[in-house]
Amino acid sequence: GAVVSQHPSWVICKSGTSVKIECRSLDFQATTMFWYRQFPKQSLMLMATSNEGSKATYEQGVEKDKFLINHASLTLSTLTVTSAHPEDSSFYICSAQRQLLAFGSGTRLTVV
Amino acid sequence: TQLLEQSPQFLSIQEGENLTVYCNSSSVFSSLQWYRQEPGEGPVLLVTVVTGGEVKKLKRLTFQFGDARKDSSLHITAAQPGDTGLYLCAGGDDYKLSFGAGTTVTVRA
Image (cartoon, rainbow over all chains, first blue to last red; front, top):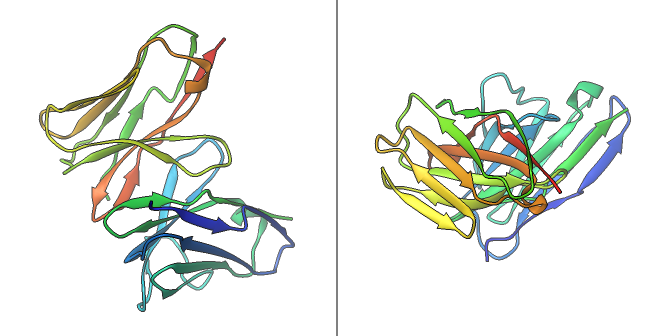
């Protein structure tokens, strides 16, 4: 149990375009979902906490207008990177929580 | 934000050797978790330690939680190439985790 699916697993986009990443809890309903960003050779940095039906809470330094989070249901949260730039290239990981915490397999975003 | 410091940052050892990774903080944690992450994948939970002084064993891996619940260690006995990966400690409240910087372990055959 506690399987979290992320899609896509990798994406390449042009600078200035927007990219949507999906995070789904497959076999449980997640009260809360978390979004992390990980640069090469570095650890996971929490970007935001997402609760179903309410606005996401962003960590200090994370632009909420650039990283749009929608948690429309108890099994789906989406992260949209708007007007992406090369410096947004990173590995984005979500996790979902009910009684357990499970991580997705991550999305490699490359902005060219 | 509760900060977790991991050491060493990198560790390269020969197959069969032992290794220890440390995770320290000035904050008290209700629990600490250890994860292993392969390149291009999400972290996978290895263990959660909850009680101060607790020792948990998972095959060749031994995890210890400090008495004051501020630090933890991961010891691998007779390391194998399959143990290669990024080891992360994490802690926090309500599943809102702060991660250590990670220790990249390379086990050479």
